[in-house]
Image (cartoon, one colour):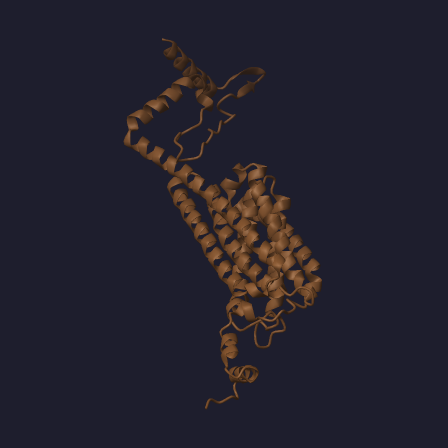
Length: 383
């Protein structure tokens, strides 16, 4: 006979007393975590959710204004940052903010996420043996950080697509709803399992949008390396598609395991919300694929120019002939699409400078030479 002093045997013995056959006990022992976890309070910090969210938003402003835009970007992205207009700079900054928040959320939240979804921990389990911070406390803070990321983007970006706006607003509302349901456990029987599904949604959403953040940053910094960007966009597109498929499978399994615990309203709303969010992620994948095709065309055009240098030279000469009378201000060097256009820097002291020496006004020698060259080109063209 087995020893019944252990905790698992004690549970089995208690269940066996209610059912002599022992079948319900075995069935309960093999229940998935989401089907057997008790409905419980998420965190004792729920009453402070507002101040947590407000503090994070204030911190994001300080990081954006005083660290990124005032100090880091002008030094680290010196050539790239100065060429951007205000709208592009906002998008560039937002991608850095989003990338940083997503990396922090993944690194800090991985341990409680795995323990709660697949381990034997719950929201009240301490983070460590002697810690006063519970896993629910940390997940609440990370949820507020997740929502603040989308609030910041909605307020900061100058242009957003309607799909992005709908996705961000939906993510904010779902995240906040998932946290506050546990404040009324008597009436919200789905509070705990709803937040567990929110954890799955949030994790895959972070993973799906992290790589596009990185891809767009690389696109702004290395915009003349089309072969590199082609591979970046293709890889990012494939990752986001695989992430959406994996998320759908995992959500489907968790819903099936806990279906009997859901109220009718959640049985209807939850699958619809998942479909909407999956469509938003696939829309992002479609945009990444179009960027991949754009870079692929530029790579093919560059290869064609390398294989037919004579045609490329004729095209260059034609452009130079058409603009021969404006030679002093024509864009310099590489005219191919493999590098961004660079406008010639005109030295005002030598090109069109008007000098005045001892009251006599006239062109400098360099300006005269440039004028002579332009005249000869015009004369040759007419001849």
